[in-house]
Amino acid sequence: MEEGGPITVTHPEITRYFMTIPEACQLVLEAATMGQGGEIYVFDMGEPVKIADLAHQMVRLSGLQPGKDIAIKYTGLRPGEKLYEELLSGDENTLPTHHPKIMVAKVRASSYDEANDALAELRDALLSGDDYRLVSTLKRHIPEFISNNSRFSHLDKERREPPMTKTNDKPNTAFL
View: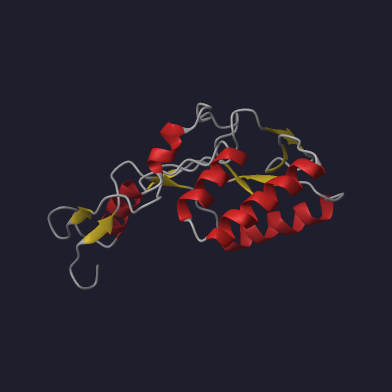
């Protein structure tokens, strides 16, 4: 803004969650004291913020008018970038803890043998040097892994299982 702009935003509908560093650190420390071992903690991050609205507000707070004094330019999503953050799949949910902003993720169970076999398959795909084989293997083992706006997007259409797009009932959460 000091140089007169433009301010660049990737997409007019893109949203992200924001949390102050002290608040995030506090939640991480509190979650660390709760752990019994192996839990995945999910934090309530508040409401998502539309980046375009944030850009307009920053311009106005500096005493300028968006579009008149400083342009806001939309550059398009970068490869792999999502419009919004998805944190849990449709068959995963959260359980409450004693802290209102910290939940425990209730994730799909898998056996040690299943995980070990998947890791061996991923290692082989990685060592093959074939990006498509690696990404395809990831998608087979992690159905929620969707390649938005990337050269691997067609692999999502080739998958037999439909992608899970529903998030949990607390859409404003983040993993620890």
